[in-house]
Amino acid sequence: MRHKRGEDRDQIWLMAPSLNDIVREDSMARVIDAYVNTLDMKGMGFTHAETRETGRRPYDPADILKLYIYGYTNRVRSSR
Image (cartoon, rainbow, N blue to C red):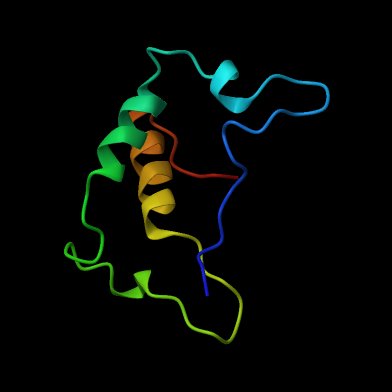
């Protein structure tokens, strides 16, 4: 079973440009994305990175870490 994933960044939307076109080239989101993609999540102790065949698919721990770091750098304490 695979992790729950968001939309593909290169997918063209019906009425809007792709997500890569919306995010600026010098955005901190791109830096965080590139940095977290280089990390070994299992080696860092994210033990729930393995999915199971039963139940709801979990979010990818790398995606959650990216969201946490982005929120921390922008002083966002909640996703609500």
